[in-house]
Image 1 (spheres, rainbow, N blue to C red):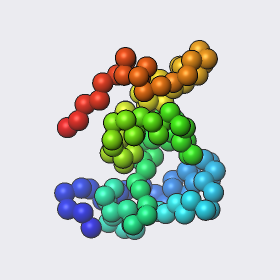
Image 2: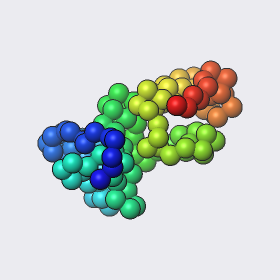
Image 3: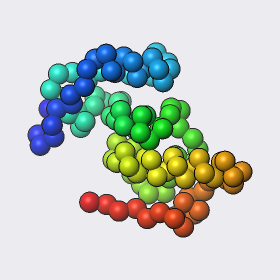
Image 4: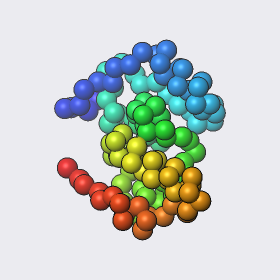
Length: 117
């Protein structure tokens, strides 16, 4: 268990509902965290994805090529992304696509800057 992070607290029913509503295939192996686990305790081969990514950030799996390009350009892992950052990336992509403009990292960088803390 990780020290310094609060344990994850959300009902099993909420997790099961997310898996069902977002149509996660069984092959993805989505797992409900064990009691007392934190976001940093994902087992080998797994990553932590936050409920807010899906609900507030409109994140969907599988991810788009543009989203992968953002992660690659900024050299960070999705588990390091704040849900508000997820909203910014997804909103930018939606606006581009609705205007029939290809979303690119260079275009994204015209409007947004990455901040680390």
